[in-house]
Length: 139
Image (cartoon, rainbow, N blue to C red):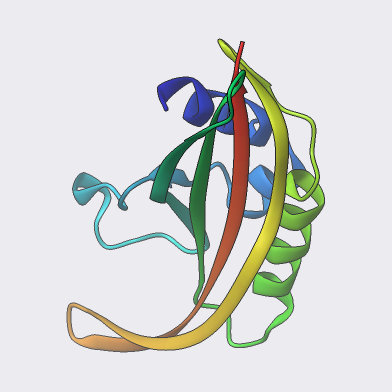
């Protein structure tokens, strides 16, 4: 799993999506030492990982969710983040040490608006959760 996560971070580095979030892409959670959060940002995590095999091949089906956060009052910032993430990862090529990418494709998008309180202020934050299915086979 580490090699898959490393490949994803390598793919994101230097991309338009990475620029959209000013390099604020985190695994599992926003860093506690950087609170309050600086918007926009992305947190991604593994939702599930299932082993599958045929008589001759071993596969891993992994569901990864990218949570995009924007405090912008308009929708332009988060829709740009989403479009750039999708352009980067949907049906992409990905080099994974020890595995071969069979496919990486978007399978779900959920859009939400949340209220986040930081100090004395409560802000409306857009949160879009984008799920990608990643199927890999062992080399």
